[in-house]
Length: 201
Figure (cartoon, rainbow, N blue to C red):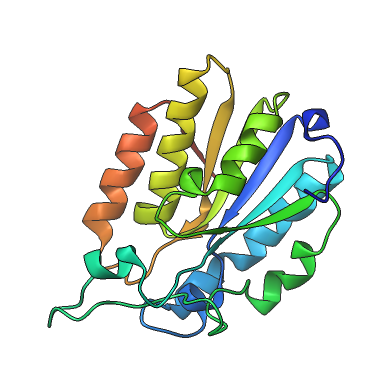
């Protein structure tokens, strides 16, 4: 950890998978996700001004990642994405400068849930004063959903009362029109879990 004592932070902003492999290039990239970047930048600047902890989550896989075996196209081919060393696993240029800020951590994950990344779990274990978490990024119905739901369950398990907010105007997924049913279901389930869906007025 490069940061000072994680116990000092009361708020956290998580930016999920705003990497080239979902926005710029590769099998799962959708340039429409970039439309959420201006709002994400606003929220990053707000978090920085409040001296909140900022966490960039970066989907990062090996060539033989087990996840690739589960996600296949219509022909049954593995959908390889965000493979380490290809550039797809890197934060998009529009957000790159914020990755270098003070109070910022970048964490690689090899699953659809950032809670399963060992470094994220160490971070949330150590950041014991966190009382609110804001989530932005992609993909709404997969990594945003899986990570946020797992985070809510983690807080429940350890009796930590933490407010979780997912910013609807700062999340997106690939092929949104085709995936609308999944997006609606993800939002419904997050709401049932007590996760707040919010957006700028």
